[in-house]
Each structure stands twice: as C-alpha cells, then as structure tokens.
Length: 392
Image (cartoon, rainbow, N blue to C red; front, side):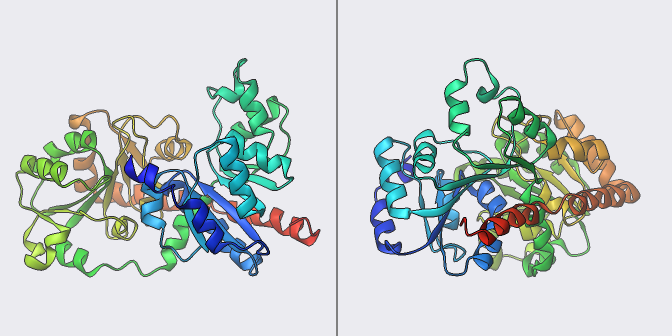
C-alpha cells in the first residue's frame, strides 16, 4: 500500500519536468505488468510511426510500475493519479496527449470524460468483454456512458464486439490479442541463460511459472515423488522470502535459490527457485513442460502464451473461465487443466513419460500462437489512416 500511495505523490512534478507545453505526446495506460506487456507491440510501432512524439505510460498497480519504471520504451513512466475530477483535469492538462490508448481493461470515468471533453482520440486495445460485466446489466447505465467516451474499440473476439454492438457501440474492430505478437517477438531475442543449462544438464525440466501457494500445494507431491531425471524450476509470482522458505521446507529433494547460484554447484540440485523477477520469459525457452500459476486460486491465471510460443505443453489449474486463450488451447490439447494434486501428478507423469504426447502438445501450443498473430498490424493500420488524414 505504501508504494501505491507514495508513488503517486510526485506524479505531477514528474510530468511538469518531463513534458513541456509544446511537446506532442501519446498516452498509454496499463493496469499492471501484464497489460504493459500486452501494449508493448503497439508502443514500439507507435514510436516508429510518430518519432517526434513523446510516449507517456501510466500504471495503476505498483507491481507493474516497479518492474518497468526504468524502461526506455517510453519517455515518461509514472503512476496514474487516483481517478478524481481534479486529478483528471490536471493530468490531461499536463500530458496533453494527441491520442490516449488504454490496454485491455481500466475504465476510469473522470479521465475518460475529460478526454472526451477535450476531444482527444481515445482507443481501447485488446479489449475483452463478458456478458456478466456491469456495462451489460440493466443498472449499468453510468458505466455504459463511460464506454461511450472511447472513440474506437479493438477487441479480442467476436463475442466482445457483439456485446458492445448490443449496447449501441459500433466503433469496434475485432483485432485479436496483441499478446500473441508480443510473445512471438520473443523468439527473435537471445533467450539463452547459461545458469539454466548448468542446472538442467541433459535432464527433462518442468518450469512452474508465476506460482502462488495454492499452486505449489498441488505441485509438491509430484515434485517429491518424481524421478531424479526430472528437474524443476519454480518461479513464484511474489518474491517473498518467508513464503519461499516455507515452500522449500516441504520439498524433500535438494533445492537451491537463484540468488545463491554462485555459491553452489546448481547441477547437483533437482529444484531451483527463482527469487528475482524478470527472467521467466527466457526461462520458458528452456522448459520441456510448463505449469502456469494463478488457476488454482482467485488471483487470475497468468500468461500461458509465453511458454506456448516456445512449443512447450502447458498445465494449469481449473479456474480459467475468464481466459479465452486457455479455453481454446485446452480444446486443441495444447494445454491441460487440473483440479487437485492427484490430477496434477497424473498429467505431469503422462507428459514426462510419453515423449510423443509431450512433443505433439507442444507443437499444438506453438501453432496456436502463430495462428493468432496480427492484432498489432490491425490496430496500427487504423492509426496510420488517421495520421494520413492528419487526425493525429
């Protein structure tokens, strides 16, 4: 909470120092780290298309801001001040964007009303809507008014478009999800991590990414009973020393921490716990199987597309009803869902022992990514047309 509060105290001073009245700007808003990653492909192309504009990126959550506050992708990266009328007016006045782009979610009424009043073009990118949301309820009139502040919606699927059309919002394009472009671009990077090769050796490796305690609870039995030919990399979602130590006490195999890798011969361990942030995407490139956290509790399923792009079969918990990509990949059999420890052990054992099944599932996951790329181009083609008409 302290980061949430204190991080916002310097926002307006930062804006005054970094954005001058005669600067041309484009503003991106992301709720947290996941939305930021979703927005990266659009941000990169926007910088190319508008080289003389400054990019402003705002975050709502400390978990996003703290990780990306030093990124060079944008000129200014700050928290979004709390959504009050005075804050919205002051922020828009100082930022004075020619275009505002919100990523996936985040519908802050005062900011959106202020953007509309100032006639600033405002888009939602990679939007995803469900019929149980307030916008589509009889009592959702105010939030429908908020949605009408957007000039255009780029949505992930036809369902979202139909829901918006049903409330008389017609400025919609089914573009898909920019995360497919983002994760696909990872294949162009150098993903080699020497310490992973040292740890893994010639063994099969299961990477458990963005895990919560409820995920670790269903994994522990299989970890303890697995053959020594199987190695595990655990990357908790929250780097909390006491929680990590508590988990390690339940591990019967030899385990080590990433932070201690220089002090030990990590090849001698069966379990490596990653106690820093920022490496997980590259780690997936070294995985033979991936377990993705968040689906065993209420925190929300984490990004399954990152391992999928490397052709890795995926296991998740059973709470993924709000994640259409997980539903589709499960139907294709590139992803498997479990409800308890016994099911977790069963599917992991199957993927470990049946090489053909493991490889085939990974191929399905990789093809799924390839077949769903293109949201960035669809969005940017629309923006290019506006630029050509001098509307931006």
